[in-house]
Image (cartoon, rainbow, N blue to C red; front, side):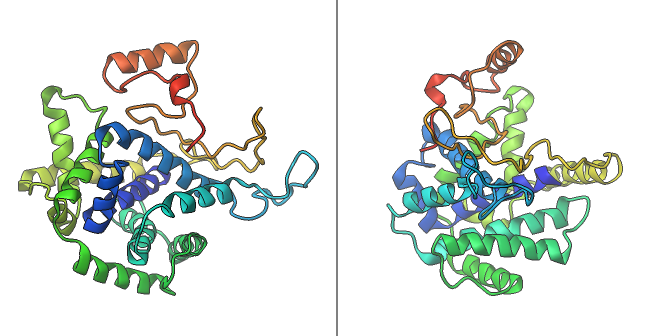
Length: 313
């Protein structure tokens, strides 16, 4: 279920846009409040969060590793990513409750998605592991009043939604820009892009849909969406071979990173390819041909190149 868990975290971030205090700030900063900037903002966010999840917060990921002149005693990438996020957030006035709600969704949405759409439920230990990991991240971000247990966090999140998740124009705008980015590669032919927009509106919870001012979908759209998700569950549960230890989409490499030619340690890359391919290396050989074809077919807006290969800001 690695891909499902990854999409659940993405949806958790999307769900925060149903809170007016969050969406108004994003709209004001233009980070997720314009079609031009949304691709880069999503790429930045994915890389930073992937660095927390794919690199050890403290110490070696490989217990057999030994420190030496060319190998630091700790992998610094997760700490650098956290420091970067804290610096970026320090520019804005964000309430502790908005921080805490976002943190809670990163815990609760993967659990809910696997219970609904995964080929099996997460065990109590796995659920507590999500809670402990993100609670530690929250503490390092200076978030206070984090609930002591998973059950308390769920109760707090539900109460916060009942109080603060209300319709607002900023919710609609930010959600619209984000949906447009997420379904960019889907062609308009045969009404596929229109169906994708309806699909999103059908799978979100009613409270989220109302707050984002998304149109209510007819029952047949809900049936189709539920059927597609059920088919995915059946395939995952009964027709997929057991996975190897390596996760194709997000492999965890225990080797410590080597600094680049500038002496800098790059963040944890992701396999995602957004409409604008930020931070992707310039393709060569067969990969150039494949990327060129993807652009011609409208899957991507432009080719990767030097202009888009920059250090994560």
